[in-house]
Image 1 (cartoon, rainbow, N blue to C red):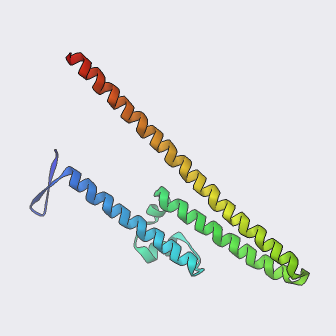
Image 2: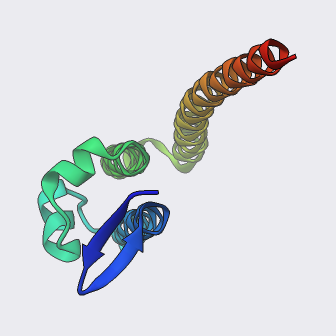
Image 3: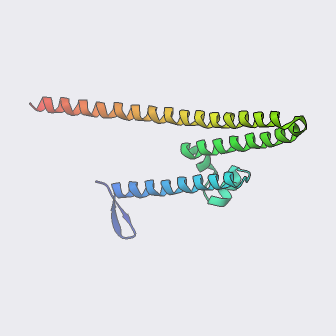
Length: 151
C-alpha cells in the first residue's frame, strides 16, 4: 500500500483515489445540472458561459465524455428549437393544420436524436464493459495457471 503525507496525516492510496473520484463526480454533477438548468430556462448554452457559471475549465467540458455528450445534445436541442420557432413563425401564414403536423414531426426528430445519442452512449459503455470482462477473464486464467503450477 502506498502512503502519502498530507497535512501531517498518512493517507492510503485507495482513500486518495476515492476522494479524487468523489470530486470528479461532484464536478460532473455540477456541469450536468448547469446544462440542464440553462436548457430548461432556454438560455443559450456555450462552453464559455458554462465555465463562467461553474468555475470548471474549458477543457473539462471538452474532455469529459459524459458531460460532452450532454452538452452536445443540449446544443442540438437548442438549435432545433430555434429552427423550429423560426419555421413556425413562417408557417403561420399557411394554416394551423400544417403547423401542427410539422410540430409533431420536429418533436419526433428531437426524440429520435436523443435516442440515437443514448444508443451511442450505451454502445460505448458496452464496449468498455466488454474490455473490462476480458481483462478480468485474463486475470482469472493467470490465477488458475498459477494455482496449477503450485500443485
